[in-house]
Length: 530
Image (cartoon, rainbow, N blue to C red; front, side, top):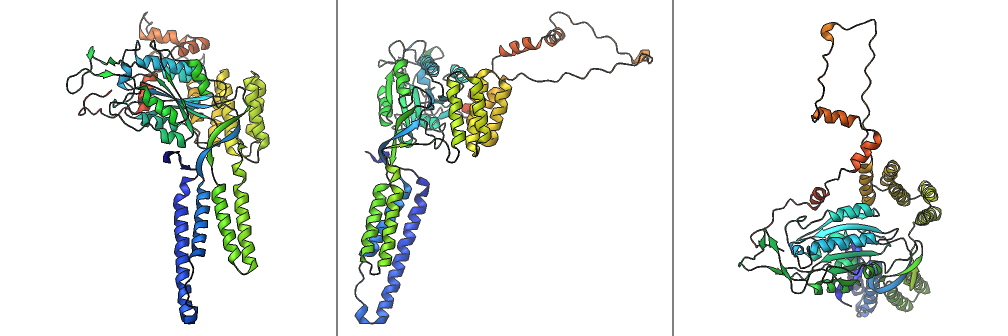
């Protein structure tokens, strides 16, 4: 076990624990100095040396209690969780080296095709996000169950998305980690599709951050060992010395990242094909086959009991030295409380409750709704989720129920109902990025609503307008003119208008480029990057 494997469950408490222990030590030293002064005043016969054993044992017990509060994570343990799908982020390498054609038409085209294959093999209840990296990493889409939207985003990716060019795998992994929700018990997986090459030979792969986030990394290497040149306006790309740049696959870097996070490494064959079946099995390693099934998941173990036991033994040893039995009893009671408080968290197979405490009925309704949805009973699932949202006491659980209800309506094509459900989910949890993302898709899918202009008032037959006030007749629209096209568009029926809008494709490439924030100028002083 390396030092990078050690982490804390509550790192935000480190400063508080350290300052509290330092304050306790300072007060104890101050008390010792005052006691020494009082003994000196009482006479030479009471000036004997004061043993430091008791003070040292007390400070050591306080240090052990502080470590127990921080929750050091050492090793792994089994946790029984209800299977509700996995959270996976597709991380695509969009650096310039992915333009190499040793896997025709290019490495990036093959990686993009493999990403679409992963999306197609997601199971009900799974959520997926999208990230890309070149010299920096960018999260392009948060976790969402909308596979169709994610497939469209993957198809719109290219190697011109992120600037400056380069290949920083560690930055890509860190950007993908931002998609996962803190405190979620769902398995976390990052799928890296890359050639593994980095001209700067960075040692940072993002493995420590992935381990601390309890995310497994699956890697897929594209390219060939022989390598290929990179196209640059019809000629091979050359470095600052004028030599043609040859890019080669570095599968070893990807294998190290996968091994360091408990994941798995794959390689595309000479035709760019990937073992999607094996990738799917590795992807759902910690997921059950049926929603709601209890599965064992290996997570980092929080070791509280050893430090609490050490503090309890020190308190008991200190209590036995005290002459008044009442003080000894207080010390032993404190030691017993430490052991009892630390014991339950060390069970070998603890079941994690996904629902907040105090709301078993609403949580059960959510699980029931998801189970009915998996069986194709949309009406029954809709009723269960709506009942869960209305009866939940916690806003988080109500927001989850409204979110699942919105996903149900979105898949059914009921965009207005989906819009209302996602609005309700955001009212319960305004920071829910997935609900906001799906709300935008629901709003885009809704037809534009323009109220018709008010009808002109009918003139009184007895009152005729003067000849000079009568409007002149408008000229007829010539075929092919803008007026004729407007007249033809106004004659479309509602169904025809919706079909016409469905054929209008959004400019996803421009949207992704905006999300990637390509406002920087590429540094040219270092030469071409790939």
